[in-house]
Length: 269
Length: 205
Image 1 (cartoon, rainbow over the protein chains, first blue to last red):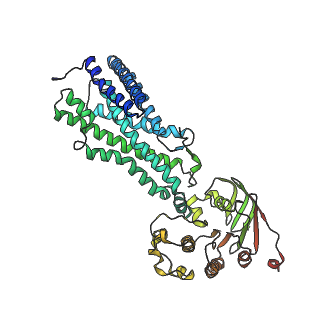
Image 2 (cartoon, each protein chain N blue to C red):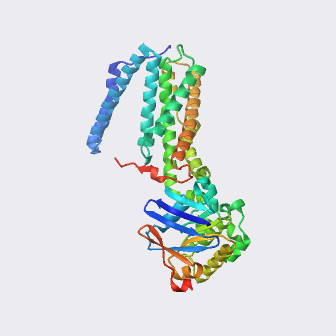
Image 3 (cartoon, rainbow over the protein chains, first blue to last red):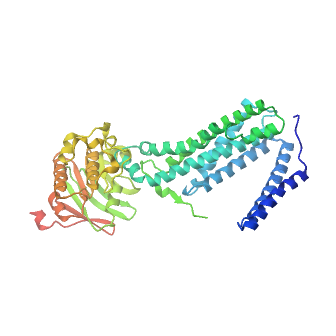
């Protein structure tokens, strides 16, 4: 890793001075943001320092059980985030379970595939590779799955009459929900498709930029970025398809009824 | 018996006993909100419900739900449409010319935009859409509420044809005159419980 430049604490302190300017501007212009800016900066600093320490510890231990534990915890958190982003939630255990089980499936699946088939670090469970990858995969799949489920539930509520009309004319639950399922899957896939379109033209991806800053040859960095984008796209499409089908299955029943009673509105927090 | 209910219970409605013979039309009357539509939804198995429902002596549980709804068609008061145009809602996208003519609709109605339909047009097309699947039982919820006298007469004539072919009809209506014209027996829904009304003199004679 030639050309890697270390940052000193002093550099960071000086850089944080820019936030001081933003805070002063907020005070002068009475934006009422001063407290929030300071709090957000303090929180970010604490969170990042902590995760840095934690990752250092995890990398030092490099045990398969620890890597697995971290990945499962991240997937569960992503599942929780999916739930938080729903305006209409599935009732009961499903509100959390559907998102969490989708994340638990696609995150580890794609990560294991990446480190065993493509990147192949030694050992394959080396957290230095597995954990950043699962983070990127889960973060993107989470956005897709949240959008897909949100579109599914709101469209089911809005188009009750159309769905029930199809059921009443002897359609199965899958026939009746097909237009909504398609719409939900499309909206879940949109962000990753747009991201692929924009990558390299409008936006330089963070991981690639990071590798370049760390002294990696840009061509090498591009290869890594492509790999991770393929992984993300794979995880997102699999996750969106599974979650939307699971949601549809739950919102209908074996007698081919639409079961909106299994949907609850999230309370405004 | 074509359609028979025994001890049917769903959320807020109950029908202890109801039989409709082949070719018979039975009216269900009662105040708005008394549960008439919910009863029809329960019969067609669109809402969770308990109890025995049978068609020609065969229990509903032995039908797959889509097959049941092919045989027992429910036409709600407010019809739902999933496509932009009328024709895709019909089997093979084809509307019967005879049916359209019988209800005073032009042959080009299939090309109409659903969003432009009047209440009466929607109502008549929703009925044709259900009849196109040749059900054995029709559950109708206020089938002529959006129609004028002439339109109502046409719908009733079409329903009489269906009755003659042996189709059974259970019809929710607010209009006692319509019940007199089409039915011999009436049920009343009161506070969610369905009870047969004693035959009144005119119908009994």
